[in-house]
Amino acid sequence: MSARDVANSVAPPARPRPPARIITRIVPSREAGHGLLAGMRIRKKLFVLHTFFSLALTLILLVAIRPAIARILDRADSQASMDLLSTLVPDLSSARASRAPKVVDFLAARPHIVLKEGSASELEIPRELAVNASTTPGRVLELTTPPWEASAVVFVTPPGASEGRYIALSTSSPAARAAVTGLYIFTLIALLVVYALVVIALEIFVLPQAVYDPIRRVLAADRAVQENKATDEELVPEIYIPQDELGEIMRSRNDSVRALRRNQQALNVALAQLESAAGDLKKKNHLLETAQRNLADADRLASLGMMSAGIAHELNTPLAVIKGSVEQIAQDPSRPVEPARAALMLRVVERLERLSESLLDFARVRPPRSREVAIAALVDEAATLVRLDRSIRMPALENRVPASLHTVCDPDRMTQVLVNLIRNAADAMTNSSSGRAAEIVVEADETEKDGQRWMSLRIRDNGPGISPAILSRLFEPFASTRLDSRGTGLGLAVAEGIVREHGGVLLGRNIPGPDQSSMGAVFEILLPQGKPAAAPVIEYAAGQQP
Image 1 (cartoon, rainbow, N blue to C red):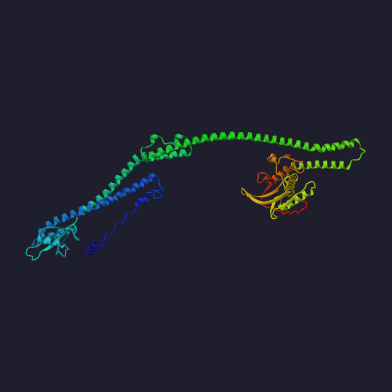
Image 2: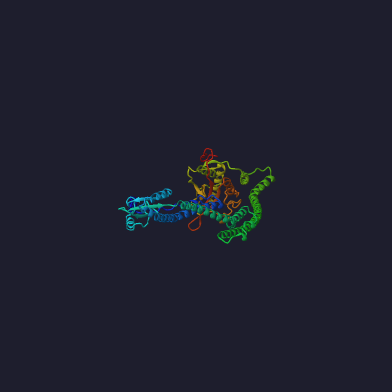
């Protein structure tokens, strides 16, 4: 036994290596469109796969056939060696010298035949085989151990010799091996030809009808869907749909397209109905806007009528007084006018002037001249102006507005608003019989509503409050003369218009008491707080005209 055989018998058998994942590198993976063939068309993919599998199958067949053919050749060489050695044994064991040259010439003419003589150790013959050969001289035995694969051995003892010798002969058949090589080549060519014929048959008779034509029809139908062509072009005809998995996909696609078109038709109907409804809604909106304009015109006419009636009512009394005085003067022009009568006529004229000024303020519309103003100073200025009017009994007024609070407004117009509101509060508490000490409190702070910063200015009194009958129309002209100390009925309407010109809101409400009774009224001015104007802050001292 050689050292290699000993090493192989001692060492553990090696683990077989896993086969290389050749197919997974060629065929795209299942999870994603990656791989060597991912960017190819189906026909090219099939051609590459056909070629790959044909070569792989040919290689596998050749590898599988080679050991069997090799065993057949070895067996044939072994049998030929035994037959040839049996033929040569009489000449090799003869003592006649004339036969030896014949054997030498025979072997020299055939180099594929190897013949050696010697002892068992010299010829490397296994011990067991050497014993069997020596016990049966002249019997040819098969020798299959290295270096004598497919060989024969015989033990001979020539006449007159004291010891015998072993003769080993090995022969091979070059013609047989050439035939095997030709068989390999023929098998390879035959397999390639057969597979080529199979591929051609598939490409001509099977794949065009079963694969290529259905795919082409599906792609044409998809292009028709993308180009919004006729409905019959978007569907694959039933006669061209095969009865396999690809046909199931094509039928499912046709059903999806039909459902899509049905939904599209339903959507078109809904859009048409919606468009019709939108047209009707537009007409109704137009009619509603027309009605609103007519209503606004009617409202303006009603307001104009109310205003005219109020003005007529306000003018009747002073005109009657002036008319009586003028008639007395006309009766006796030489008679001097009494001082009381002259003072009365002056007061009547002044009342007419105030009424005229209020009407002008109500009708005047001009954009405010805004500046950044300190609110506390405006409140002080308005309170001072009200105190100068001797016809008003000014109650205690507490200004709680922070001195640091500023806003952007027209100081003249906003002072007019504060004067009207403070006068109304003072007049309401003058006519009140609640017994509480009259007091007016002015407060202000900043608040945030709907993401917008506002300045809230509140004038609160502890008078009888606002009558619920006129609370809803508080800022309409001539809503109430009791709430307007000037007696024109336009003070709150003018104030609300000025605040609205500033982008703000003027609100009025009662202060509820513990027993749901009114504890006074509060008027709130809300002005938007934007960025300060690029102008210096105007501070008004008490008693200083703006």
